[in-house]
Length: 211
Image (cartoon, rainbow, N blue to C red; front, side, top):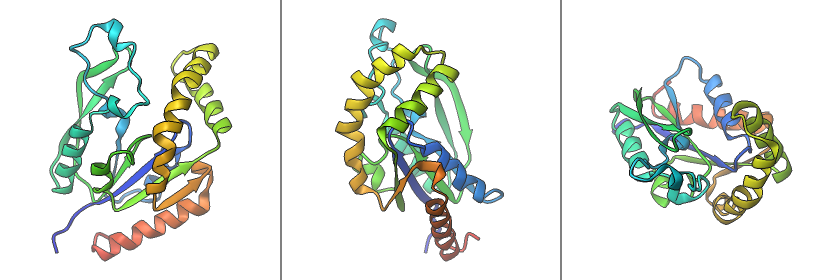
């Protein structure tokens, strides 16, 4: 049997704790062959649009993502080929000229709000996770993050959440929960669920003789 990397999808709403879950899993496999591929890096290139039009981009909509490129890169990694991951410039609202060189690994963790929305992406995953966190906690985490890390005002964060983030979550993200093999409540604070996931990944790797 041809050796092939294990692909784990980690989905969930903004502020749900996806990144915490992903980093917890990666920390448990320190020293092993594992990489993280963030869907946020794969927003579509918008250099062909005027800056005023780029400002209108709805980053919580499935059409904002270049899933064709993401799928192409995952398929290369599955063949143990390296990729050049794009970088998105949030100040210019388009793809940067910079890229990040990524070498293939035995475990690929694909993380993002809408990775379970595209059937083509789901078909590439061995395990599909959905981090399920109450809306009040998600908005609080988003407030802290955007104000502290992105220089946003409280009013702008709340306005965006009410007008864009919340309706997009209800329409596109929440329904993808039904595709998950495992639902993890409360994100990175759910140590029991993370322990179970780590054990499952170890089992798969042992079966493939990676460990």
